[in-house]
Image (cartoon, rainbow, N blue to C red; front, top):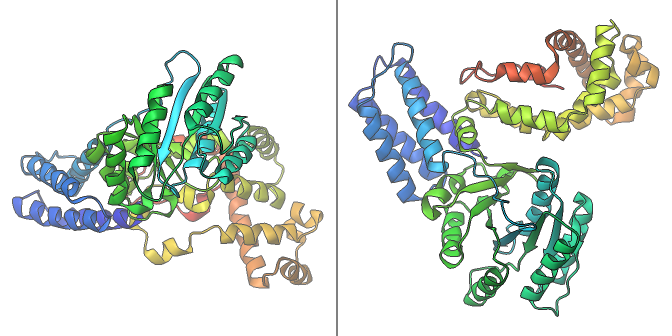
Length: 460
């Protein structure tokens, strides 16, 4: 998300770097460019106007410290205003109630609501150590009930069965009673979506809300609908006392208009964003981290948290001990590292959180994809165990066989072996520095905007 906006803003603010000081003229020119960048990102016009006016008013009176250039001073100002625009802090779920805490999910059909119920159940179990029961009050789509049952099984949440001939309020009340009987911490109620907002739908969800009195009422919205997402959220908020918003499909939204408009238009915080299709692809919404991503400063904190959550610590410790003992980092170890990258959202998932992405040429960004990971793993899988553990024995005839077995060519095999040699050298440094997590923590706050590390340094 935000890739187009990030690129535009990075370029706009970089143009100020050659200026000796902030003047009314260069501020005015920069604000005009920022305004265009936000409008192209599909940010709502009233939001753009307020944002630009606030920055311009503050920038004209700003004193540029000796340690900052005019460009850096304005970057800080834009960053701080973006944080204010998106809500200043991460609004967590309020679960402070007599168990079970009830969460009511609302949204239009096709927004990813049912999948988000499962993602939220998984997050609550893993991050908050809560037991969760889910139930579907969508009596109009039996397939939605079945889908939630399947997803609940996948994430390990309790599922309360329902049928299309039941009343939504009865389903919800029975699910809550079942959760109380089993001492379950949280109940998530999925509701029916529609293709558009209608009076019948609103009446039903209002009745449901009044009957179960949820502590959280969340609106799930597709971020790819841009400022329409904010307008739809406002319509729901006018009918229901929403407590927050979950943005879905942010991995496919290059513009980011929804994220920048929702808080201002609805007054409600974005609490989570969906970053992929898998059930673990949900992360809390941190306005300060998102602002840093937009301005190309990276988001090392989230990257560290993902690494701590997904990296297999036993394997990591075994590898560290192996290297410390002087044993060679081999291609089986390399394959394990690639799989860890996949668990962390793939190459782009990592790179998008590293500083300086906005300054990368588009051609370079286009080459950053996970196809190379799959190709490398296929090549390694086509080797014998002896070749994987001792790559130096791989010669011409071996390469031809490996290339044929992996559906690639000899050049791809040579490229892998060269990358592997570089990785071997790097892993020795990792082991002496305390591993990937320690390295990334050290990066936080030390890499300036535009300070993009080499691609070879991405690994686990």
